[in-house]
Image 1 (cartoon, one colour):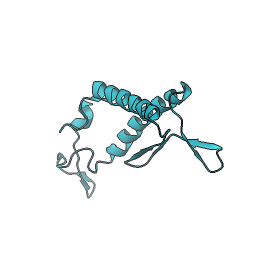
Image 2 (spheres, rainbow, N blue to C red):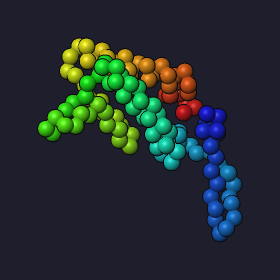
Image 3 (cartoon, one colour):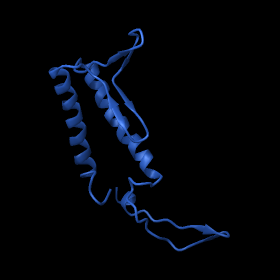
Length: 116
């Protein structure tokens, strides 16, 4: 992740590269790379949710006439999770969320730090 934290930009003007500069805003606040990082992380989270479904720990919400089951929806910068409205269903969802959080903290460090 060192390469992500040390990003620099330069502007091409009249065919010449200008001086390099470091952005003042953080990576998650407008950097074009942030969308791709979200997609990579969302894919991992999606896999954890699917594994919990296969193990019978999570049930999605039936949509329409009950033929489509939705467990989660990921948007550009947001997530929606669907599940059984019970204590057990909520606990099972929390297990998946905590596992995802634990994996992300071990892999990347705390996501809210100034480096990210």
